[in-house]
Amino acid sequence: MGLARGEERLVSHFSYESFEELAEACVDFYHRSLEREDLSDACERRSQLAKHIRKFHRECGTLTPRVEEAIKDLEGGSCLFLMTAHQPNLFAYGGVLRKATLNHVLAKRLLESLKVPVVSFFGVADQDFTDDRWVRSALLPDVQRRDGLLELRFDMPEKLMLNRVEKPSRNVLDSWRNDIEDWMDRKLGSIGRDCRSLGLPFGGENAGLAGNFEGFWTLVEDAYGRAETYADFNAFIMSKIVNEVWGYATLFSRFSECQRIFEREFCFLLSRFDEYSRCVKEATVYAGNLEGGVCEREFEMIPFWYHCGCGSKVRLTAEQKDGFYVGHGKCLRCGKEYQIDFQSKDEPRMSEVVSRVSARSLSMPLVFFHGLRVACYVGGLGGKEYLEQARYVAERLGMSFPPVVVWRPRDVYFGLGQLDALMVFRNVTGTFDFSQCSRVEADLKGKIAQVQGRIDEFEEQKKQLTGSGGRKEELIQKLKVLSVRESEVRRGANFSVLVRNLRLLENVAAVMDLYPCVVDYAVNVGLKETSEQWIAFLHGNGSLSADVNLRTGFDDVAAACTKSSLGAE
Image 1 (cartoon, helix red, strand yellow):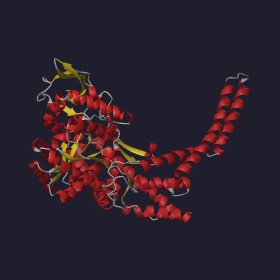
Image 2 (cartoon, one colour):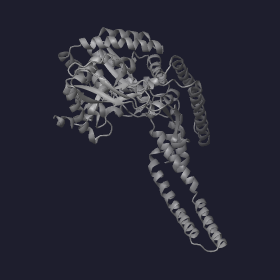
Image 3 (spheres, one colour):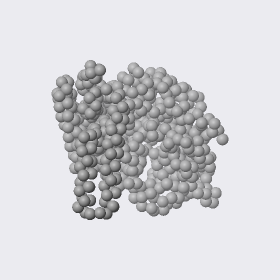
Image 4 (cartoon, helix red, strand yellow):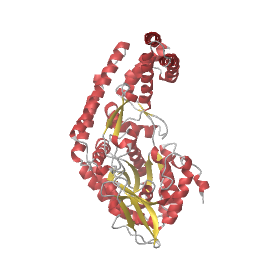
């Protein structure tokens, strides 16, 4: 059934080594599309989409002149269309916003090459469920906290769509601000003390962190004042960063509003459901050895969710009835049963329900890419598998599918949390050479295991004594002797210090491995500077897999730490 081609593995489709390689793939896709595709339907979809985009930006307050100009290009219909999408996460991590940067730079590059208008679109997946951790929490590096993380969290009911959740209360918003300011104060104090004790330079008070944070929080407050829902609060923050601070022409729209323009594309999938279902099953079997992707029963599902009145969604199972398909299922939250009749197999009708449906993970790229004639999609690491499955289905149904890229490097920089973790590492190990971390951690674990073994022996002896009977006074005396010897072993080995140091080393590793939320970038790098440095990297290095080194106000301190480590050697 053509599966041999699928066995090329998904990386063959989504792995572009460099920005230039990606741009060339988009140029090639554009030329091939001109030869074989009629854009009349796409022009209609783009004009419909423009209305929802303008509505979003008016409500967000980001209808800038550049955004307005891009909307006019979109309404013109003949533009090149670039897309990305994401859930409206709480203070989204850098990778979410980096998608907009890649599309922004790519748009300029394609404009220069092809001499046609290029529009960048960011779809806000506000109909996703509240269950995912990253829509309800944001992480900052904090080596002294449990697991090395400070979590800003918003608790929500499960199995609700994000756009059905009210925005946080003023008390919650203020508590987040207080937590961030406390984090900044603690980190600055800790780093300052360590630098003074080690004779290292420290100009934390001149790093501009307070101003960086105030600028960011002003943006947060404006988004909060305009938003009614939790989804809008987070989406507005993203748009304000991208459109106001960075000055991009990126166009935002809520999926909850714009997906209704794809009635024709949804009906196409329903009219060919037998073939669609078979292809989905094949794609699922092919990806069976990979993590992620859609569930193995996806081929039985109608290619969209139905929205229940309670604010949750219904997974519709397809069933033939009198020669055509109906979808039936229960609401995942309230349990209400639904049966949706599409009336005809060859010409299904959705006009009565299209305002209450949203695409599933696999069908989203099918309807958006084909309906809008997307020329490039910037995806995320977690979506690579279902995007590959969607490509397999699209190719066999004759639907448009553009180049897809994932740009998820590690941003390497020394901010408050990272520098404090480096100081803690120095205090535990006596060196700033982080390459020694694994060796030191292994040594600590060995010492702890050795001491723990002796402690366990004492505990076993106590257990045997307790069950042995005998005179009570004699038993108590023997237990005391064992407890004293156990305490001596603990003190002699500094067991509590060993355990604490191991926990700190594990926290240091967690800090250095963390992909932090945008607050960390805003405070340490600066919002505007983050965009400028990402763009400079794409223009200079251009690798889509290499780490990105960012500058902060603490680079002199980090350099002094490195110099100190080299001097010690």
